[in-house]
Each structure stands twice: as C-alpha cells, then as structure tokens.
Length: 141
Image (cartoon, rainbow, N blue to C red):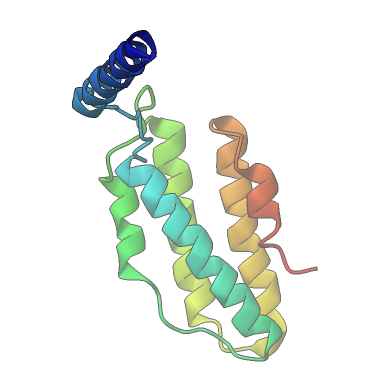
C-alpha cells in the first residue's frame, strides 16, 4: 500500500513539475503583419466593392477617397519596391478614379468604373499577380 501511495505521489509531483515548465514557456506566434501598401490595397478593394454595390443599386458615387493618394508613399511589402511601371500605373489609377468620381452621366458610370478596375488588373499583371482573381470580382458585368 505504501508503495502504491509513494508511486502515486511521484506521478503527481512529476505531472506538477511538467505543468510548471509548460506555464513558464512562452509561445511565440509568427503573425503576418501586412505592409502599409497591402493594407491600402485592401482598403481600396473594400471601398470599390462598396462602390460596385452602390452602382448596382442605382447610386452614382461622387466622393473621391483622398486616402488613395497614399499609394505614392505607403511602405511597400518586403522585397517589393516602387519602379517606373508601378509609378505610371498608380498615376493612371488615381486619374481614372478621379474621373470616375466626376462622372454624372449614368450611362458612363459602369464603363468608367470598369475602366478603373481594369487599370488595377493591368498593374497587377506586371507584378503581384496573386490578387487578380479577387480584383476581377469588382467588375460589373
């Protein structure tokens, strides 16, 4: 009986020691943190998805999001850098966005909106092709 009690005590103490060790070990997770540019691109996507819904519901958006101007200075994703192609596309994108938001003719709204989306797709075809299927979902058929 003493032997069993002693054995149970040793098992209990051993488990208790393991629990203390597990409690003191910190678990570090490698959490993805998007760059400023990735965050901006996601915000642009969300905004334009809302614009698409507005257009489909008969509303013509007129507010140009000034935050889009951050495309010129937002920190790029690691390993990426601004180049002349990116700079050219970002200028075209901003111009097309601005023109779209000035559209008052309801017959041109969808055309101008889709043109803006196509500029996004064209830019992403030069680099960072991953989001293209998602961006295509913005097009109004």
